[in-house]
Length: 245
Ligand code: MTE
Image 1 (cartoon, helix red, strand yellow):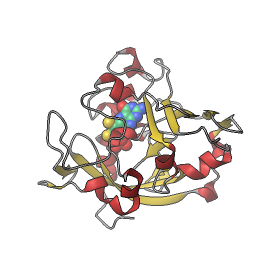
Image 2 (cartoon, rainbow, N blue to C red):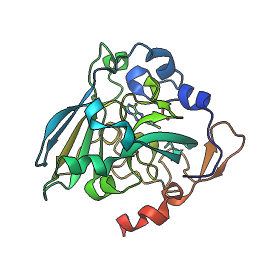
Image 3 (cartoon, rainbow, N blue to C red):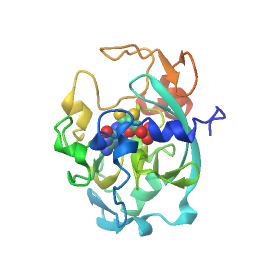
Image 4 (cartoon, helix red, strand yellow):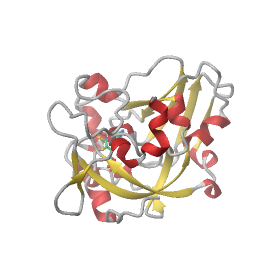
């Protein structure tokens, strides 16, 4: 839990990236209102002893949920502080019994252009895909979130289930997940496929490595004036730097 001031609920729900509902920051709030997220199931497959299709309500019991207040850093050099509600991803993955060949975890968003109209335009390689190395995925900071600000996730923030990896740039936080696959090879990821020179697989927040088109040294905290320095691993170096030794 960071003790920094929370971003307002209004900013966190009206300034979003969710290209399935449009590419402007205000589009997801405007266009996702009718998106149906109930019923919802998650497929877990690949290098696991117990693959399955699990309805969301059996995947997460209310007593599993905890609140985590995380600093989030978008690759576009802005940041927010958000109280997420979720469960560590590692706890969930263990239930499916990863095999020794499970070196990476790949995630996929729903693909349904009728329900997600932004997918009718080829602005990204759909479905949105992201990935983590298995030791990253098992790190206790990583959560699968189903809520924020003490409430169910709003559609524009990735309902009903999204990834939160606080030491990486925000694009790793894939929304509206329908599939998780454990595998031996590094998975392809949407932003890396679309612009390999700009977005790598690891995407750890690093103020010393600039994006090819802008600096990553500082960030604008949404809701405040001016800029502040960006921290290595977004301030979570104590917990995660050793993953990259
Ligand atoms: N997930 C999907 N499926 N589609 C997206 O366009 N955008 C990513 C990430 N997850 C995105 C996504 C980016 S670039 C960011 S910065 C975060 O979501 C933004 O999350 P927020 O809108 O909840 O702040």
